[in-house]
Every structure is written in structure tokens, then in C-alpha cells.
Image 1 (spheres, helix red, strand yellow):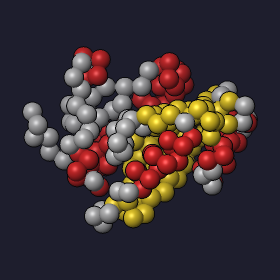
Image 2 (cartoon, helix red, strand yellow):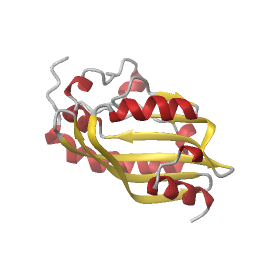
Image 3 (spheres, rainbow, N blue to C red):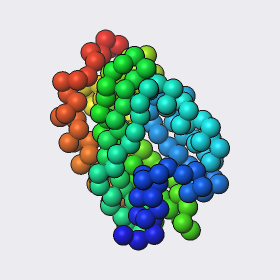
Image 4 (cartoon, helix red, strand yellow):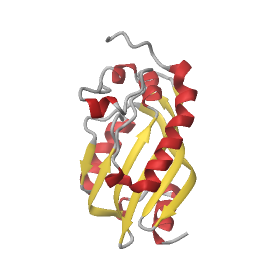
Length: 183
């Protein structure tokens, strides 16, 4: 594995904010946090992580596969947690990380939002429903929100892994979705 893969493996072994570029771009659509994008190291450390962990008594990310392509590293894994309400969850995720000059420059994260909604019921209403045709193309009829992430953000290899990830996990989540009564 090259430098990018080594940096990301190091982060998954022991998360360390010193590995972040000063201007890191942390994009997490559909996560149970106040915003989809966090810009800069302080925003990630002081904004994203506390907001996410506020919903869970226990939370950890376990990476099972790393796929490196130059500066980009696609990581497939699972979040394991117990919500404040006592709901145990295993949430599949896919991240596409970018590493430049030995620092994490960006991450685009996708996770099974149906599992977030199951663990944190108040988050279910916060998951955005699509309003434009391009957004609707990234939304499955069963209610699972699949973030529309362009090839510009993750590259063709990342898009391939996102598609494989979502197809695999869509079947897993069909019987776990809360009923959608908003339509």
C-alpha cells in the first residue's frame, strides 16, 4: 500500500487530528449531525465528532477493506454502536478519502441512513427527501437515502465501490426500514 493507504490505515488504527490538512473537507450527507459538510480541522474535531457521538453511548468504526488509487483510498466497513436510547446498531459505511502531502485532505462518507433512523428515531425526519429530478435519481423508492456523490468528488473507482456498496446493503436494509408515512 502507498502513502495514502498508510495514512488512512493509521487513522483507522488510532484517529489523530494531526493527520488532517488544515483545510480538510469532511462531507457526510445523511449522518445525524447538524450539517452535511465540515470545513477545516477545528470544524471536524469540535463540530462533527461531538455532534455524532452525542447520539451514542458506544461508537466505533471498523474498516474491513481498503482500496487505494493514487491519492484516493476507498474504505468499506461498519460502524458499531449503541444509541443513547439503547438501540444496538451495525451500520455499513463507505468512505472515499483523499490524501495529499501525507495529510488527509477530504473524506466523502456514505452510510446506511435507514440504520441511523432506526437507532435515532428523531433523525428520521431530518433525512432530506429529494426535491429535484437529479436528487430523486439518488433516492430509492423504499425510503433509503443514497447520497448523490458525483464522479468529480470520488472518481470512477470510488463511484464503482459506492454502487457495489449500496446494492449489497440495499437488500440488507429493506426489511429494517421505518414506514414512510410522509407521502
